[in-house]
Length: 75
Image (cartoon, rainbow, N blue to C red; front, side):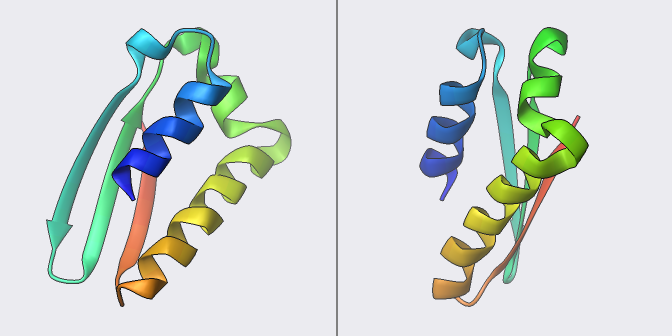
């Protein structure tokens, strides 16, 4: 799941070197904290949050296969 998220984010941003992803797992809950360059934040969030909503949907589908819940925070 983490590798898929990194691949998606690196495909969207102009500066893949500035992408930082931290993951924490507590039981069946997985929380990702994503940090990107300030100039790339808009690309990750998208117009009216559509891109980040799509990324979260993909993560939720992958997590559902493992009976987990996933959260994505952009910091």
